[in-house]
Length: 135
Image (cartoon, rainbow, N blue to C red):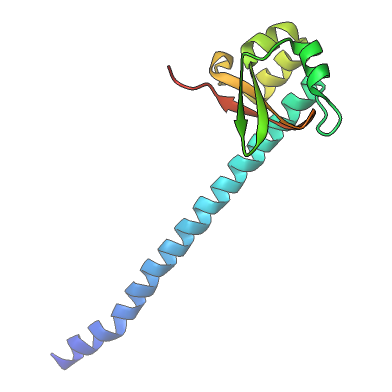
């Protein structure tokens, strides 16, 4: 009986450490996945930005409006002005963007995406792809 209790007491910390190790491994895996998705999003955003010829810090509201017309919608985020354009509509007028989106987003319905351009004052601060709000 004492041997069983002794074995149980010595093996219990091993199981506790195994659970802790699983938790740490899970957290690291989740962080790695998030970083990979963030890198993929950044790569996609950079590709779309290059295909559209938009340069943060250089492109202005005026040049964006001349190239793409009025935005489909506007808004604000963190005190920055947002202009939203339909990705599918922009792709129709830009063969380079069409090729880029097919290469970077092969399984994505372009009608479900927006190109969101963030302005700081009169110049472009950044560009990102976003899902259209569900109706």
